[in-house]
Image 1 (spheres, one colour):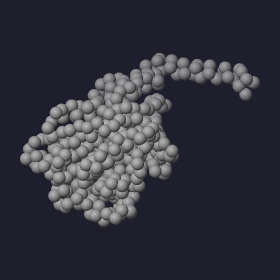
Image 2 (cartoon, rainbow, N blue to C red):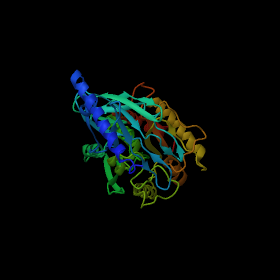
Image 3 (cartoon, rainbow, N blue to C red):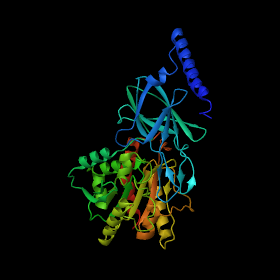
Image 4 (tube, rainbow, N blue to C red):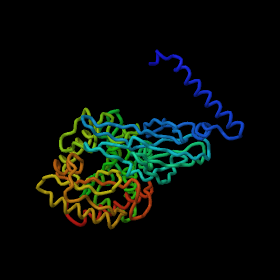
Length: 421
């Protein structure tokens, strides 16, 4: 039809241009600003060029707001997809008020469609990328979230939760330096060649051993802050800290999915593997070298007679439960008793109130179930609510998560004192 009506094709753009020109003239004559001027001057750019920034594309909508399209990462050989990490920098006019709308929130998890819109009840903002505060969001129809922010200066960082970057981990490891109670061991590399470390705090001759893993899923930075809080508490060298380290040692994989963290991904490694799945079988070193390296380390520890007595995989979600798996193993009742003890101690000594998963819960292939089933280790998945701390009635922050980590020092001490694992 285009070729048969050339005059119509040429006429419509001309009329549209003349109409816009007339509107602009009338606004200018009346002293009113042009309709397009505020959106051009208020926001100049959405910057994603820095460490841990999320891959997004963005556009200005017809109401002068900004629509942020999150980009999915996909699981290999699976319908699962995930988009939930966001971390970017707004650049524009100081004092500007900007409304952001987030779309592409309809994820697929364990083969089931869903949306993370209900979990996104708040967003973190910062003028400098270091000092953060949470602001509430509004859920919109159609799996969308909206938040309005004011630019205090020429830029404002916006993130789902307070970020923890590779550079933050590097600073922690540098601060620890040559501390006599700390040993850092490289156990392998990520897909892209980044080193994976096990951080040991305490003596390898301690009677009990705890293993912690953080950041299997890149967006879930809360676990990193918890780990940092625990490590710094154990190294304070007061009487309690010295007693803790006589009682147990902590072994930590502080950032399991370094590639995903660096690239601002949400859930999977760069080859599409979920690092909290398929622990019911040997890891594939070609597709999940991160898990293969951890598995080799664990098998070496077991051969040396240093099997961990307790393992926690640290995550973020919108619920904050302690996920206790129930694979068919002879020692299941023993495991469940120990997990009930752990839950009770968490409630007593931390701000944990959400409780454990129900008695029918299964999470096959997770580290929690896989390590119990294959290696006989009491393991669980510890989620941290990404938008609310119920006991404190406030939004989470790096400081609160570090306080939680510090409180874990006494939780582990009481856990091992209460029974013989």
